[in-house]
Image: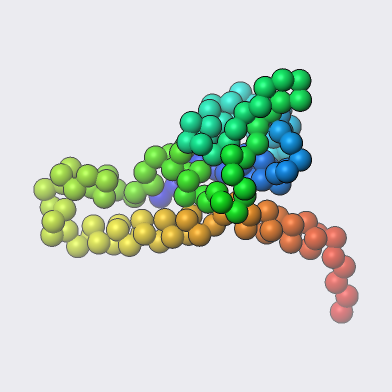
Length: 147
């Protein structure tokens, strides 16, 4: 199971907005530069995130994008869901009718556990937790260690 660039880049863009949360709107150009991403590609991602109610756009000279809710209220499951749709590793988890064996398929139980584990991780990881991890990482880069 591999997430597409849409999900990976979308999470990175949302993290950029979370890092600047409370400081006003951020332009896509700034997000693109900060994350090393294509501004054109980000435009498509932000539209899907806006449709999902995760970001707001602000027009005008000092406009840009901001999170629609606080970083602690947005989790990765919402972001990935808005950009990827279902993350089920097999299609029969979304529609049991696709497979004649789904009722008694023991491998399907494995895929269900896998999906549940992924959902649990994405649901429990908020943008705020990523902001905190980022802050710890930045602090540790400057730390000096002596023995």
